Image 1 (cartoon, rainbow, N blue to C red):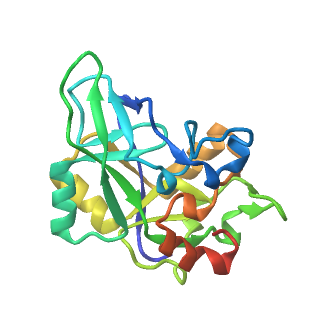
Image 2: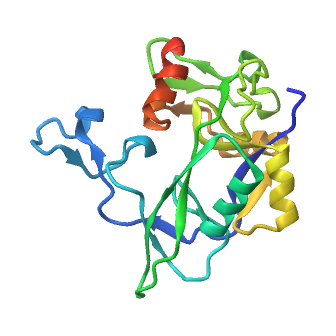
Length: 228
């Protein structure tokens, strides 16, 4: 891919975790509560199918411009305003329900949901799907993982099956550096490839695209590829 891109990652210490009360629609994950008569369940699911806004607990009031849970990325309201003013594309923002441990403060944080599409991981990247499963295997070479013909040109985007890996255009990367935004680091594809090798992450099990994307967008992109 001739266009340069970067991977967004946590910088420093993780300062947030999920609060109690995050719920998902049961009918999206029937295998999780097969014997329950409740319409929702509390466990783990994709951001698009959460019934309420993301609920987060912060360890401290001293937070960066970016805040991370496992697996979410949140930004402060002034960052969201800057991103919108710059006209960056490929994301939606939902206000998070936040609190700080042992405090009444409620910081104004927004969940950054990536909606840009970078295509399926290329065959050249070394990642392949095990037939008739939602499991992919192989050490990804991130320097060639994006198919430029499939990328929709968004500033924020994902490559399937790595739905929780947030990629950004060089334009976003330059802006983050110029504004010296905190709580985030920009990782090169080569460095990310080395990290995958070091971590021995050779296999990934995916959810569905509609667990990550808004329904219409997920259907548009995912149905032709069998990942909706």
